[in-house]
Length: 372
Image (cartoon, rainbow, N blue to C red; front, top):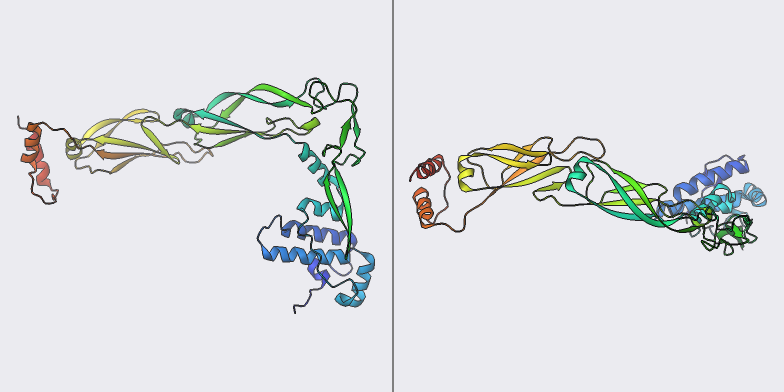
């Protein structure tokens, strides 16, 4: 059987620790090891369970005295472990430390407006250079008639009698280790903390109505398909003055007719014929900033690529710009005239064996091209 660790050692405090020191020690362990923050972590769960038991004993003055005198053998000091693992993380602090700022933040969260998504399509060129776009967004916005309070002007709101304005109700239950308190959203006010004397006739007490709004959004250079831009506070208005949600602009980039993107690099597939590949050529190709001329050296092979440094997409985070790669695609003609077929036979011939490419082959090809 495993030996129980000393409760003071579990919490990392001395035996003369004050109630406030015990509280701070348990709070730190709870924040680090609560199962809500460490899913599927057996070690963290065991540590949280051990700390819960230690704090439940040492935070009770009578049980702490018994533990100090008799250790784990004291009645009620040992026994089954206290396990608050099923209690939501936020409620741990209501249970042991009271509501305070945590309760206020949860009340605000319950009234917070919904986040919105706006799908925006931009061109390949706009993704490269960046652009400002105007968005027409329809959303629930604060009611002008009641200024978002949900109450008819002049009537105001009253503190909810069910929760005393906290937005949550506390339920206490007795356990072997004392009283355990949990919290839940107040059913009377729905978490708002206040009730209306006379609901607004325009918004029916919700404090918000459907409106259209035009927004300007700056799209930075270098964005890619699926990039998201968050516009804080431009989601739906909160219920009865609650904080608004955010607007997320999700980008779709139209494909370019010739260029494709791979992260920050751009790829262009250059189609050349056999003569261009064999003899070399200077060819004008497209880039995102306009046409440029590149040299294709003699003997270029199918699939060979050439790098144009710094011709790719900019880094949206401000890093190095990507490159453009020109990938050669050899185009073999399908419909040849009898004269063309005869010319090719004269150059290479049909042997039924793989051709060994050599300088002599290119010499023969040049001679053939010079014929009438």
